[in-house]
Length: 209
Image 1: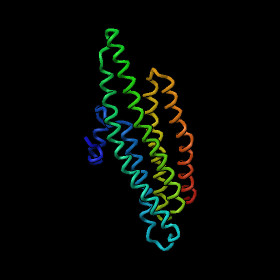
Image 2: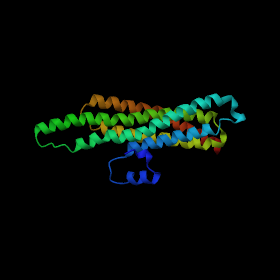
Image 3: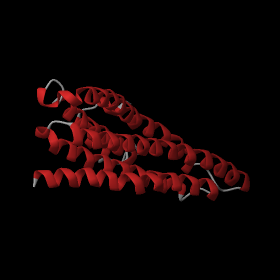
Image 4: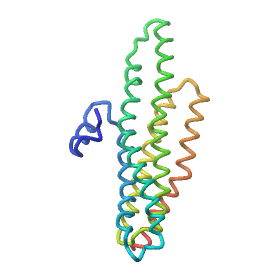
C-alpha cells in the first residue's frame, strides 16, 4: 500500500492502529516532507516579488532542491514500511532447535541492517531540508517567515524521530562493530543538524517577537 496516497484522516487512523506499518519511521519521513514543503512555500511566495529580485535565482534553485527532497521523503514513507516487513517476519521465526536459532539469528542480522538503512536515509534527507530552510529563512519573503520556522521545527522532529528507528534496530544487532558505526552516523547528524534547526527556529522567533 502507498500510504502517501491516503487522506490525512486515513493515514492517522492506520498509524494509531495495531498495524505494524506505518510506524515512527514512516511518520518521520512524512513530517520531514511537510517541513520541506513549508520551506518550499516560502520560496513560492518570494519568487516574482520586486523586493526579492536580487535573490530570485537563489530561491528558484532552492525550490528545485526542495521539490526533489519532498519527493524523496514521501518515497521513504513507503520504503520504511517495506524494509520493516522482513524484520517483522524474522521476529516470528521458530527458535526451538539450535539450527532454528542459527537460522533466525542470520535472518535477523540482515533484516536489522536493512531496517536501519531507511531511517538513516530519512535522517540524511532531513539534514538537507534543514540546510534549505536556513537559506529560505534568510532570503525568503518575510511575510512567510513563520513558515520557515515551523519547517525547521518539523525537520528537527523528523530527524530525531528517525534516529530512534535506527537505534531500536542497532540495539538488537549482534554485530556490535556495525551497530556502533550506524549509531555514530546517526549521532553525527543529530549533533550537527539538531542545533542548526534550532538556530533557524530561534532566528525566526527573535524576528517575530
